[in-house]
Length: 498
Image 1 (tube, rainbow, N blue to C red):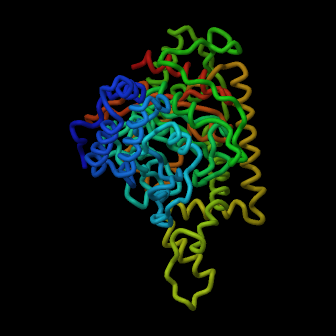
Image 2 (cartoon, helix red, strand yellow):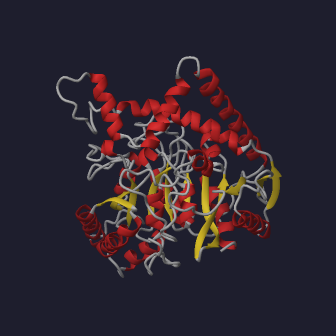
Image 3 (cartoon, rainbow, N blue to C red):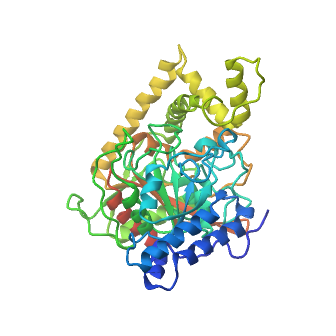
C-alpha cells in the first residue's frame, strides 16, 4: 500500500471537547458520534490495521445508554457519550484482551482495568481494542501477531510503538482519543509519528491494575489525544489512588486545564519559566535535520513567550538505552513466566504422554513471537547466577544515576525540552532485521521512564519526505506529579510552532 485514502487523516478534526459541545447542544447524539467512529474504523482499518477488535454492538449499547441519561438530565459529565479506543493490553470485561499475542488470542478478561473502568463510569463509549507490539515489546507495532499497523500519514511507514494502533486511530480521526501504555516511550513515540499529543504520566499517577504487565517498575497508562486539553481531561478521570495497585500514589489530581491556553502558573513556579535544553541533543548528528530544526523552533517559541532557555547536561541516552533494556527485559522474563499453557491462554497440544516441561516449552514456542522470546531470554540471562551483579544490578545503579540527574536538572528548570524521536516515522520493515537500530528509536524516551517522570509529546512541525508530510513531535519532561503545569507549558510550544 503506497497511498492513503483521500479522507485520511483530516487536518482540522474535532477533539473531545468539540464533540462534547455537539452533544451538549443537542446537535449530535452519542449514537451519531459512535456510529461515525465505527464506520470510520470499518472503512479505514483494512488499510491501517489499527484495531484488533471493533465492538460494534457493545459500543452502540453504551451510546444509547448515554443518550438516555442525557435526555433524562442525568449526564455523567463532559466525557459522557464520547467514543474512544483502548490499547489491547488494558483489560476489558467484554471482548478479548490479546496483547497482540497468539498466546492470548482467545482470552477474555473477567474484569476491567481501573483506568478503563473510571472512563466507563464517566460515560465513555469504548469502540474497540487497538493493535500493538506483542506484550508492548517494540517501537513500530510490527511485532503484532495480527499484522503491523500502518501510519495514517503514509501507510508505507510505521506508526511507532508499542501503542501504534491507538496513535493511528487518533491520527486518522477514527476516534478523538485513545488510551495507551508507556514503558519506554510507547505513548510518546507513536504520538509523535502520527501527529498526536501523547502523555506519559508520573509513575504511580494512574493505576496499573488491569494493565497486562511488561515491566512493572516502568509501565504507565496514559492518553493519546488530538489536543492538550483532551489529555488533561482524560488524565483527570483516570488518575488517582487505587487500593488495588500497590504502586498507585495517593497524590492529589489537579483539575484539567480549561483550554489550550496555559493556565495560571502555580505559586511554586517562578516566573518566567525556565526550560532546560540538553546540550548533547542540540544539533546532534544522530537526529534527522528536520528534528533539529523543530527543536530550535520549539526553543524559540518558548523564548518568544517569555521563557528562559538554559542548556543542561544529562546522562548519555545510549547509556539509558542499555540500562532500560536490561531492567525491562529482566522484569518481563519474570512477568511473562505466568504464561505457561496451564492456567489460561494458549495450551499446546502435545498428547497425554508428554511431561510438564514439554508443555511449557511448546506452549511458549507456539504462543510467543520472536521479539518477545528474545526479550525473555535476555532478561533470564541478566538475572542468572553469575550475571545479575554484572548486568542487572549495574543497570539499577545506572537508573539511580539517571534519576538523580533529572532531579538536579528539574530543581532549576520547570521542564526539559527534547525530541520525542530522532527522526520522523521510518518505513515498514526498515529496522526489523536490526533490533539494536530499533531499540535506539527510544533514545530520548526511556530515561524518562527510568526516572519515573511525566512527559508529553506534542506535534510541532513536519518533514516533507517522498511527497508525504510526516509529523515531528517534541517532548517536554516535567517534575513528578506536575502534569497540570507541564501541559500548560506544552500549550505554549504547540500553539506557537504550528
